[in-house]
Image (tube, rainbow, N blue to C red; front, top):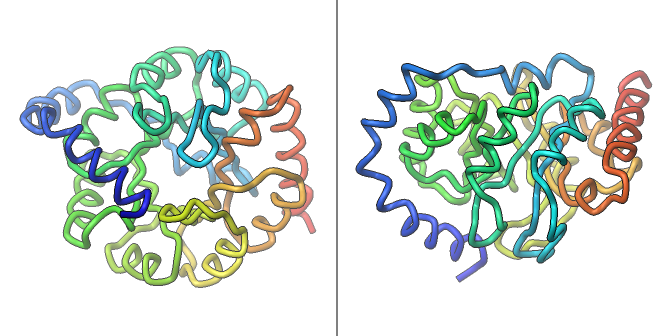
Length: 263
């Protein structure tokens, strides 16, 4: 079993106790929901940056052991991040849904719940916790599941970032009607990273879609590479979380992206 399959198998077991709350949370969500426009905020600039609050990962281990998620999110906001991504998976990423709720109260930026969404109940759970967007990983879902979850997200009004890693996955995402595409440079089966993934796939996305490059972006040169590939922005986590001064590094990345966009 590859690592993604292992994670998804655990996630499906983990959410079983929640499935019975689907209709209740759906009704509750419809009464209180208010989204900040995650996708829209990324098209406001020539190149947007999603800064990620990430304590650990299966590939990197512990990234920042004593991190305060709210302080990190505030630093990202002050440095000009367009959006903030919050890892909420507990077993593999040491995240917590409570982190998302706390960050929602502290910042004004739109928030992505970064987790492994495999059931509709997680969409309502994310919205009630304060998320403005959810992640759908094509490799983790059947075509039927992807179609169902995309339609559920659309009915809710929450943005769905649909993540792909290769051309067959991209074709599946487009066939399902996805218009907000994340190209993950990390192979979730092996965790190997290659920015050529973005360079190969971005030109294949039809115009009119919003495209984000994810994973492996650690330097100004990396920002320039993915910006040149034609994406609308980048999701950056580990390099910011490891930085001695995340605010300063994020400002450097934003400046490099703006400069590249002008060339």
